[in-house]
Structure formats: C-alpha cells, structure tokens
Image 1: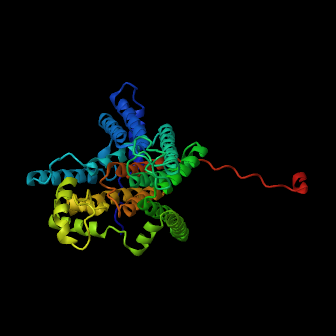
Image 2 (image 1 turned 180 degrees about the vertical axis):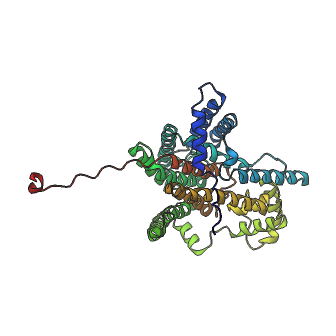
Image 3 (image 1 turned 135 degrees about the vertical axis):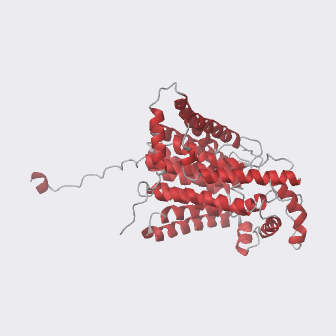
Length: 440
C-alpha cells in the first residue's frame, strides 16, 4: 500500500509567472500595474548600480520594494523570504540589545546585512519579462564594460583617489584597479559576480556581441583588481557552475578551476612577487584578526556587540590579551573580522550565522527544484553562493552592501532564467554532397 502523493508547493518560476501574468493584464492605470512598473524600474536601476556605487543601488532597491508593496507581490511565498525576514529581525534584536548595553553608539550604521537580501525578489519578478531581461542585461554589461575601461586606465595610466574615475597620471601604475570604488576588493568581487552572471545569461539574451564583450570586460577588470579573494571566488564559482551539471562534468570542472587558479597565481607571481611569497609561506594571512574576532564572538555568542562599531571597540580592547605576539594591524580596532561568517558571529552572534546560512540554503533548495526545467538556474545559484562564501573567507562580503547586493542580484537573476529559453544555436552548415548524391 502506497501513501497518497504529497503536493509540492509551487516552484519560484510558477509563482512569479502567475503574478506577472495576472498583473500585466490589468489596465495601465491600475495601482498594481503601476507597482509592477516600479519593480521593473527599480531593478533596472539596481543592476548597473552594483558596479558603480551604493547610493543608486539603494535607490533602486527602495523603488523596487515600493513597487512590490503596491503590486502586492507574493513575497512571502517566494523562496527564503521568511528566513530573510528572520535574519533582519535578529539583526534588529542584536542591535537593540547593544543599544541597551551601551555598546552601539550609532544603531543605524552598517546594517547592510539587514536589507541587501531584499533585492533578490524584485529581480526574480522584473527579469522574468523578456524585454526587461534584455534591457537589464544590457545595462549590466554596459556598466561592466565601463568599469573595465576605467580599470585599464587605473592600471596603465595610474591609480588616483579622486572619484568617480580615480585615474591619475601621478598615481602608481601597474599596481591594482579599484574601478568606481575606493577599495579594490569590492571592485574585484563585483566583477567576479558579474562575470558569472554575464556568462550564465549569455545564451539567453539577444545580443551575442555585447554578451561576449561584457564577459571579456568583467574578466579583464577582475584580473586587474588584484583582489585575491576575487581570484578564489571565480575559481570556486567556475568549478561549482560546471560541476553542478552532473557527475560527468566533474573532471572538466576541476580542470577549469585549476586552470583559472594557475593563471591568476601566475599573474600574482609575475606582478606581485613579494605578496605571492608571503602567501605561499602562510605569512600574509589574517590569523591574528581571526583569533581576536573569535574571542569577541566567544564573549557574546548569542547577541554579539550589536553593531560594527561595537565589534571594533571590543576588538581594540581584547586584542593584546588574545594575540600578544603579533602587532595590532588596527590599533583603533578592526572594522570587521575579515571573514563573512565570522564577521556576522562577532557582530550579531552565532544565531545570525545560522540564519544567514539557512537563507542561502533555502535559495539553493529552491534552485535545485528548478533544475529539471532550467539547469542554468541551479548552476548560477550554486556558483554565486560558492563564490561568495569562498571569497568571503578573507573579507566581510556578507556585511558590506555592494558585495551583498552583487550576490543577491545574481541569485535573483538566476531564478529569472527559468522564464527565458536558451537562444537557438546557429544552424550547422549543410553537409557537402557529392555529384552522385546531388543527381539522385
């Protein structure tokens, strides 16, 4: 005797398709139709902004979320949304506890972890539309190409400090590229995620040439950033994207990841021999920072200090007793733990890490359900998560707004792939026929 079949909840693409079909049929003056327009406009602002700066990205998110509320988007039913709300609530509770204890002087500072995940859901909805998908990918590719050109200028002409282009003939040359950001690590990771996204979407949007140029620009900008975390992220992300297609792709995935790692290590050895030697000897790690950060997390494992500033103050106080043999690189206190998961634990407590991983896991689970319909969705989601977590071993990517935006934008984009079949491949040329075959 077999049990009754268990009804599966609707997949993400089914929920989005039902919502957009119903709302698109409404009159243009209907508030819900206007809300859908705002969702699309906000995402079109946010997509290129991830390469440019946090203010326009926040603006795009605000417009898109306003549209979700007006259009009554089914956010609560989309993958991971309830877990994400729990993450925001936990950050708020941790901050409130810190304010009560007097360890949080500015309660609304450094709360990127609390809201950046929200860009995933408007992106799922907006990019399901074929026209918006083409526009959005074109805008992202254009921003990446602009960042690539700026990176080349910074690397060849000279790296300056004056935004937006930060190109200065009097600045150091052949050092690194920051793109439109003040830190090369942010620029490198954004280009890592953009490369994964553009490569994954390349066969799903109309412009072949723009797709290839965008991929090439992202790769060049990533290399010129000299961000080792981005090198690790793209190697692991490429491996995950290929390996996720099945066991028979595992060897090819390992070969591609190894080739990427060797090429990037060779570039570092050629242009940064001192840093390469330090890294090879294990002398250029972040062990001291991690040890002190673990001590901060151990002191308050449930709620943490409640804010980046609270962590910074406690780090400054505790460092000498935890790592007396290593000079403090940050006498005023490290801004974060230089590790995504450890930064969450040492700022908002261990439960924050558990909820964050549960959020990523719920999105991966939903993408796994989509794999039969759209393998590319599953491949890009797992590649984005793998790249973010591996690169995040060396920097607080989860807590910084732009890297977090990049991660969740790519995840939302991946779910939109289920609405867009691959572009038809170019037909193979007809086989040559012999005269006898032609006359038959």
